[in-house]
Image (cartoon, rainbow, N blue to C red; front, side, top):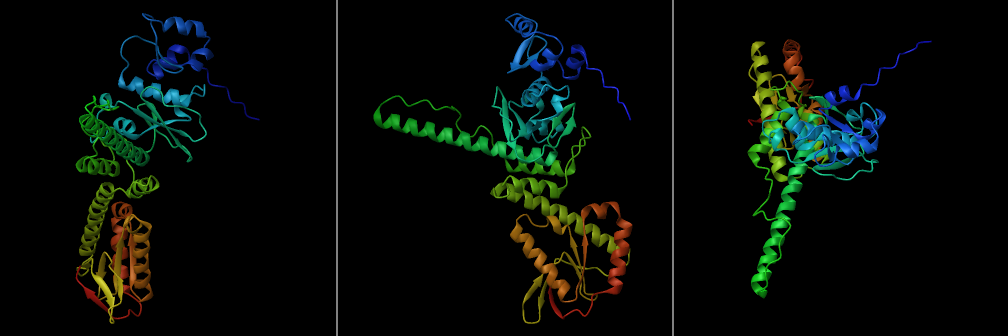
Length: 377
């Protein structure tokens, strides 16, 4: 029978140091601080201040951006545990990207709202600059500067949705204001004041910024040594959030896919050249003698009946496109073409093994390959 000695409960001073002086009411109560004392300390001129419901800052002055993040996370967690900041809630969206160190988003001091992801069953409302987002999926967290953040791919998807919703809301407010002004001109009455006085969208998701965010997500944020995500993970999150249906996001994703796959295909060509193999055809169109379409492989050696497909799992975004590519691959195999499937991670991590596989496959060649018409891509 094993016995584990429980860890000592950190003191108020130690907990405040860990959480940058941000404390919840339950954490204060667990350390013997009565509600009466908390109320007295938070009065005007007192040493403490209330940041959010049941969340306090044990100092005077304007809270730092990091303290605002702690307050948002602790407010959304609110489970009274010592590790409450890491359970039941994670920071996501633009705030998480700022913490990760993305250069394409506003720096942390400029982040005005904090989006926090919580389980669907939690009963919480938005408070202050904290926006609550619920999810039916299991929460995953990545610790960044002591704060629990959503994984990069999820944070990017939530940030894009956040910006698009902000654009739509600003456009709606602008249209309402314009309609009120037009009505005022027609009736001679003072125009109604719109909720937003902005002349256009408060947030604009420019194509350049959008492409930069996606590139940083896949490349990782080397500045702070934080992880990024794979292209497959990013596309899966964008698809889950129905963001690939937005034309400008789809265009940026297609551009990223093309760049990633072009780099991978070039790496395969270089490996083949190092093995003294003939130069393959890049992106040829294969058809049967009667003109029936077969496929468009990434690389093809017609003399050997060997094709190479690179990153086929993220070659297309929609399920229809993926089905079209898979059908072409199956047709090639059915007609005797030997198909080699390669991923970017394997290309980068096992170049020698990939080169040997290409050489052996070329030597073996296809099996009873049906005569195909090949057109340069």
